[in-house]
Length: 338
Image (cartoon, rainbow, N blue to C red):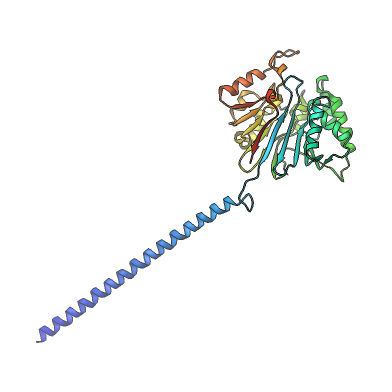
């Protein structure tokens, strides 16, 4: 009897132990699953939140702003440089402008007239006649035209006069100085930029990669070309590099100081009108979707001076790499960055 009672007690205790273990194991297992599920949900919520932030970073609608960049020119005429940037609201930025002669001057005036005689910003990369002439003419007689801001370089006057050649057309520089001295700064702001400056026009970021500085002063010739404003116009996804009239001598500085901007530019205005500018070694560092050549037809022949034009050689270089080339014979040419 006693043995049976003990057996019953032991059996009952064993049963309780089993129940306790089962209950404990069940609780532990449930707790682990809940923790894992909660962690997974938190991680997913963070990812969704990050994606949402990216989608709406360009505005409440989530749409990325767009800017249209247009190249102008006359293939059968003289070389000149004229580009515009327009935003989606029709605001206008002019880059250089070309000569004070026809047809450049009329083209510039017509562009301004189509934008209600309003220029949000005028970027003057340097003061050679084929870049600044039309600017000088327009700013000398504004009439109803309103120019909000001017962005340009500060030239070392004495050094430029010491080194300028007849081909520099220094009279355009002298006229520029006269025009700037008469600007009503209560209506038009003048900004002299230096390397590493960044400014915003119509929501588009402009990064200055080169301008006249102490290194320019040390050059023996072509100071205006190599002191010109080189800049990157950068949207949210695309960018365009404007090389103005820069030459081989500043390539190393651009490699060293601005490798990211050089390598990641989606579009490039070829240096010095697509002639006598950067070497093909420089363009080997870039991977553009397309390039813009401002070379007039006469540049594909021989120069009246010693050296042959290399515009044709440069065009061939990009053709062999299947990179699209915008030429003056098809101008005006436009691309959209965003």
